[in-house]
Length: 497
Ligand SMILES: Nc1ncnc2c1ncn2[C@@H]1O[C@H](COP(=O)(O)OP(=O)(O)OP(=O)(O)O)[C@@H](O)[C@H]1O
Ligand SMILES: [Mg+2]
Image (tube, rainbow, N blue to C red; front, top):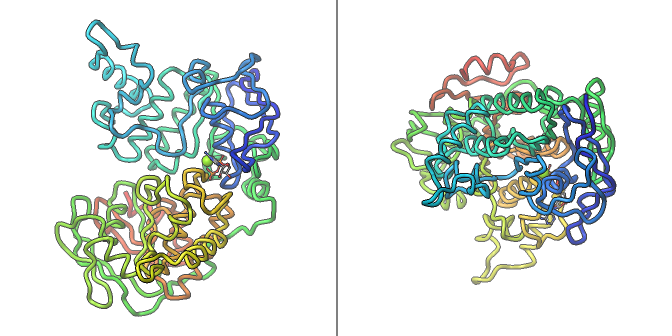
């Protein structure tokens, strides 16, 4: 490995009373892929945002290649060879991929008649090719692209000027297996030409695959850096949470168990991306749905909540009622956690407590007035139960770290005493400690007779938690597998592809 590329010394950053990064020092070598891990809210995004010129540090120094480095903007960071792929949605949806890739760099394409968009589109296609994403159309508005293709646009944007340091913040979660492969190839390319990568992820298996070393953060502090040979998953987990952890946090039982009673029946559902899907969900059942990301399972989740227009078929509850829209679903105590957190699941510019109480408002209102004591109690209870890391329950959701936003979504639907919970990628971006808590909670809910539909791209989670796994392929059900000790990831994959 080469010389020190980034040197950060005694960095501090607070948001009001929240100390996000405290006395943090780290060195990243050129040619190194460095992992960053830590619980939700431990300061990973804050630190990387300071390196990338998004936030100013309160104190401390940074050097790039031995030179003092004080970025005042992302443009300045980019001029210094630093690019960031952010954790949340990073494209402007209304403009094209090409305009996103060359945002603030439009002058490169200015001619006599203004910006030459043909040239820009051509350059964008090149930039996409460089990151193995020729299949993405850079000329259409990003709002027409799926989550993964938007991320690929961001990766192309980050890579277009060959950064010395590429920072990837928790991106894999938005990607399918194919997208992840692309990302890993890009990382290898950066490394091969002597650049460095700072890779933030909660997926420790992925971390071990991809990184040469890992830095662990806890509560804004630097804990330690482990070289490749010391990157043992159990050890990393414990360093992150600062306590011992059990090896197996999934269900301990190995056979399916639920009541006979059918609480929801999907009857020949068809929509553009759902092809004649029928199944029954039982009381106290955890029904896993797995498949490749574009197999239709995310649309199916929406359809069960009445949020996807069906061409034919119906979603019928035990009382015979048909779910036709989300309002009705909420009244019938159905909860839905969208995979698309920032745009579909929470309102960022609303306080945490109000977000939590939205589905429960009908219950909280008396004589047209919201009972504020009940509202306070409800939001406090769930924020505590899920240990949401917050400064005040009245803070905006926008001030929460990624994983803590996900907890707000969960709190929303648990606070509503949902009897049926549709969870699309429930542990996306959630740290290992909270993951464990969510799995325990799912088992408690199951015991109470709550039925859960868990749509997931994580096979271990599907196998570990489901009573039955419904595997989808090309918009249809390809197989339903019962819980069993012999069920392997290989078997599930066979029905996916
Ligand atoms: N813009 C902001 N305003 C106020 N507080 C913030 C802001 N951004 C982050 N914080 C707080 O700073 C702390 C660190 O957050 P950060 O986003 O860096 O965590 P993280 O390690 O990236 O977590 P995650 O794994 O959930 O993404 C948290 O307590 C968070 O609530
Ligand atoms: Mg983060």
